Length: 219
Image (cartoon, rainbow, N blue to C red; front, side, top):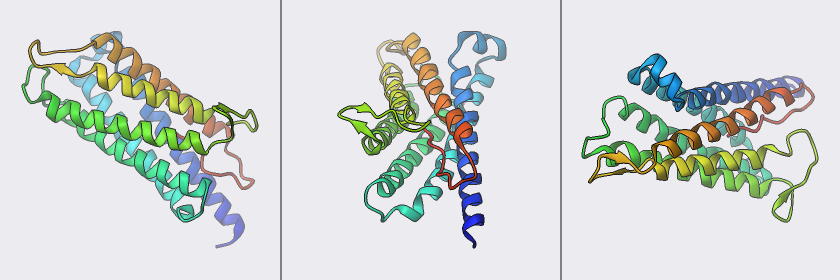
């Protein structure tokens, strides 16, 4: 493989990764909105989340493949590998929770074990991967260094991971009442977190260019 063809492969893989995360993020932005739920109905809304999670897993798989060649490199290469692989575990957990949510209702006594628990695992994986990515990014203390077009992406991505974590906590169903701790918080933090991921994915698509570009940063 020539250097030119290798660069084109990285560019194509990076764009595909960013596109998959962008599509998945749109689903997680739409799904929590009450207006969307009223428009399409509960079953279609649940399917929206499940399909969106599949796009997240597609993006996570592509990002892991992109990072695999540099997994033994100290510094950024190893951080990118751990970020992508841990994130992929998180997306797989979201596949499980969104699929089970198609079949299990809130008043089911097994809801927390079947639906909430994998959601919590996925959110923890996202938090860990986001923290690794931010730690490996260019920073001055805790603040990002504003160099390059994508300097803001690790921070916004980490914010999205934190918001997904809050949504997971708020989504715990109290057995005594059969209701979530805070449904409104679940909805707005999920949508806001997904919007952060969408911004990063669109930024990755916009920044992609043929000249030796790296895989686009994604959630």
